[in-house]
Amino acid sequence: MRTGVAIDLGTSGFRAQKIDLENEKILKTVITLRNPLPGANVMDHLDFAIHYGLDKAHGLSATAVKHIMEELGVKPEELEKFSICGNPIQLSIFQGIPIEDLAYAGERKKQKYHIEEQNRDARVIPLAEIAGFEELKNCKLYVPPAIKHEVGADALALIEKAGMLNSDEIAIATDYGTNAEMALKANGVIYTGSAAAGPALEGQEIEYGAIASPHTICDVEFDGENLRCYVLDRDMKSTRGDLVNPKTGDVVEKGEITAKGITGTGVIALIEAGIRNKLIVLPKIQTPDSTIHLQDGIKFTDKDLIEAGRAIGAIRAGHITLCAAAGIEMEDLRVAHMSGAAGTYMDAAKAHQVGMIPYNAGYVSQIGNTSLTVAREILLSEDRLWELQKIAKDIVGTHVMFATSEAFKEAYMLELAFWNEGMMFKMLKKFLKKKNLPMLDEPSSILKIDRQVERDIPVLGEEGLHVLEKVGTYLTMVIEDCKNCHSCAKVCPTGALRMDDSGTVRIRTDLCDGANCQRCLHACPEDRFKWENLTVAEN
Figure 1 (cartoon, helix red, strand yellow):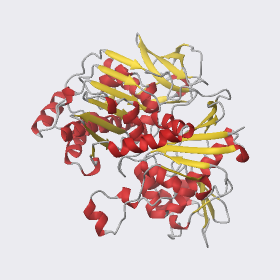
Figure 2 (cartoon, one colour):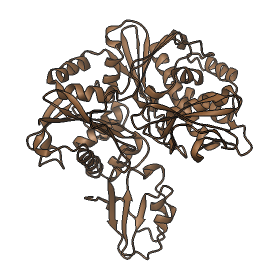
Figure 3 (cartoon, rainbow, N blue to C red):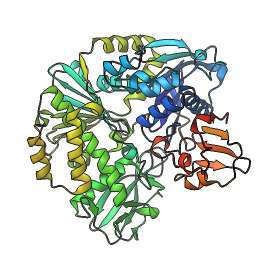
Figure 4 (tube, rainbow, N blue to C red):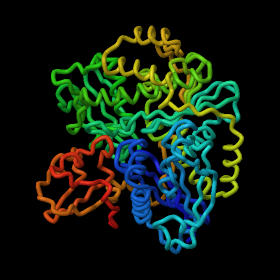
């Protein structure tokens, strides 16, 4: 059998499919619950690759992909084609392409540090040219193009699948995830940006959070004073869960399925329902223990509310910033497109109420995982790859660097005051006006929600879905003359680090918080713990 593999290299996790190239059928789907690199967002991954070596970052990415291929049941002798899609950082790390040009904004800095911009056009090369895949000599790798070096193949997929290229109407498309890519079309120009919304939208950095996967709460609804949980089943379909008392966690009525966590979409639904029913009055949860209790012991705390508020605020600040760049008002945004796992499972009406969709939207479409879709398309048709290359070259676009945008900075600071400090909405509007930023208002009634797919991956294949909970990538080193105090392991907040009596350290990288933590680094009393000495473990 002639086999191909299409993979979406996402910031919060990888999604891959095995495909029969003879009949173009999807055979099996494998997803990971995390990215193999340390850290919870793309900036952490960028930081790791720059400070500790692209070879280490590439090794972790490649090792994870090989584990996925094993789980897909791909036979090396049958593998003919392999395609990838994702943001420029993830694609570059996998291919071993230098990423310094993605780390610095502005030509002056690049000239100062003698940084060359890398070529990220579409290409077809032997997969064996990628380190770690040398044995796959008969397989070709298909890589889609970036629009510009900052705007990757995933953003191109979003723009193209949203139909923005063939329409003159003002519209915005957002991939609701850790990196939150977004594109606004106005007056024939496409304005793009990427908001570091953080992993809360993927269910991570939430105490009981999890990426969308079987047995995770994806939605909630009030039934009187109690909360009905809805949980994803084995086929990623929403199933009726328990009805619980949100103040105590007592089960009022048993549902059809157990839960092990809550997705980002469940978090958004919980916040919307909580605010609507006065269970949440920003910035606090209004229960005796400042906690909302869900089924199977799953809880949502004030700390979780802060994390989610930051993510929602970053999305809305991004929308405001793109409108400012395009010279339009937020009220002009009547059409919105949602993509990604969160954008698929999220209740669009609830997302609209909390500000994740422009307030004046009259039409919202939910279009699924556009990145994996494009990876599959270019796997099956090389003509499609070169068509995307032409589209990328022809797009008239402007990329807005939110990291250096004064508009984003001002809008995001106001969002933080609203979500985390309890600033009244009318005060938020007042300050937006004072700073001459596009204005917000109360959400209108959405006229139409067009949910084009039921799942972010509509077809799982005859062999079904497998969730790879443990990505299987590790960093390791031996600390010479270690006194076995194990301080590094004791301070690890995620349990990612293990150390034996010989001084051998082993870090499970998909659990590691990376640059945002590094407690292990600072805990060593004799400063012998050096991240630069870590190497990628074989297994």
